[in-house]
Length: 348
Image 1 (tube, one colour):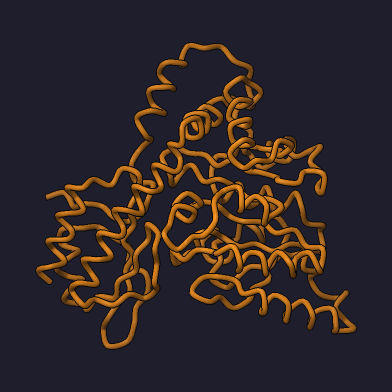
Image 2 (cartoon, one colour; image 1 turned 90 degrees about the vertical axis):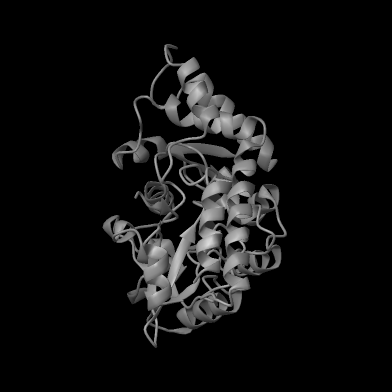
């Protein structure tokens, strides 16, 4: 029997509307490397969505590539990037940032989130040290929304972080690999326009929200950065697709009629059903998440029963032979598969 998969949110292919558009445009002849009508229209649709007509937008294949491109393009050689200890660039990117010659400077996390007070404390202490010039300089601040634990930033939290960044003239970069589910979560009080106002650069994750692959890197205030050679840097990093229209076309479809957020709302809705089933069965969670990632704590026996029918990620071993696991939903998670999981949870 083939198991039902809840391991991650990019196990399926792409939304049918994207596949249909790709097929319909398959024999079009366009210029390469993202200089085509589909990329231009996608950029314009994103600018309208974020209410930033002067935003500069670049498309990349994946999240790790987006993070390395943004961070390498902004930092000076002697600078590092501030992130939480649980931040994706610190724990799940195989040293990609360090491979570009930049150190990840870690601070504590609070359920996956960065706190402005910790950031302020770190920067104050850093510059109070008379030998600071002999250490890696903080050159930017990185957060991910949602976090590795499915938690989301509110307007107030992000405003406070942005204020500290402004005080120390550090750009704020938001990793948006799961931006759709973050912004459509019931725990979020901001939309994509608010987010664009509160950061200097972010990316819109497509890979985990209905695209075959791809992210849209958005510089909300391009005048702050040296972007003249960014396309050259993207190519240097191996990320400038010859058939670049394949990236732009996907974001064209995702943003022309709200499909991007529709996909995210569906993933969250399915996750909330699963969350309720675990809650009703008195099964606790490692973190309180209102997005498409859920982290229940299972006993060994419960894990044995569920893993016989379902694939999910073993997240963290805990005391008393218990373990935190992760169930992840997507734009394509079916009602049928969710119901099967709910029934299995009821029978634990």
